[in-house]
Length: 196
Image (cartoon, rainbow, N blue to C red; front, side, top):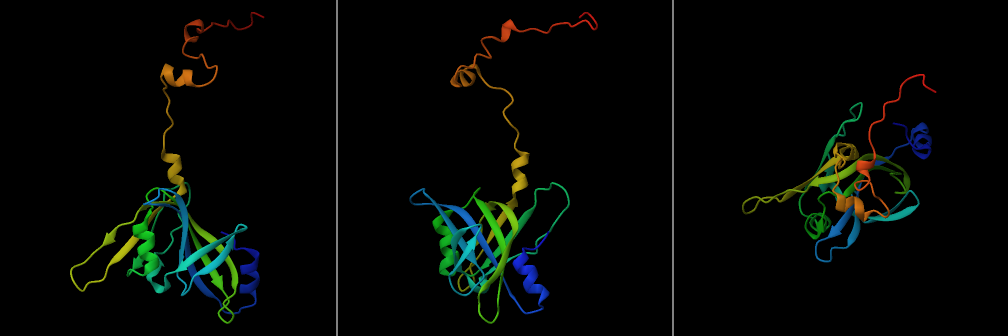
């Protein structure tokens, strides 16, 4: 994978950088049923980051937000990615309990910041896919609540098979489609070679 030019320029200067992770989900609010995109990142405070021309607000989850190592298999492989959410900060609580995440689109970004000024150097999308599950582990008394997000890559879309057979009612719902009604008018025609 290539790096964005802003990151390459900064790394060529051999100056320091602060690497953080950011997750953007197209979440659905459980109470209202409305789509509410939500971002969470491993920074200390809330941060607005402009990605692809859109300014997005990422809630700071500090060190409680940590993705596992990203694997990069070759070929078209449905890849899984796990993100640990250790401890229930208000941001993690909101993400896991206030939103319905199952099957929603999710993007994981690597964000580089200048360690002195805190300004954004650049970002790169490291994972594109969907939320597969968001299980919580609630221990006994005085234990630590943990949660994890399980993501699957966008190649999962290629595993769905199309509907190959449709009923006459489904075909009739299409405007002007008479495929089933006119099916008896068509037949295989033998074409002798060299007749023309």
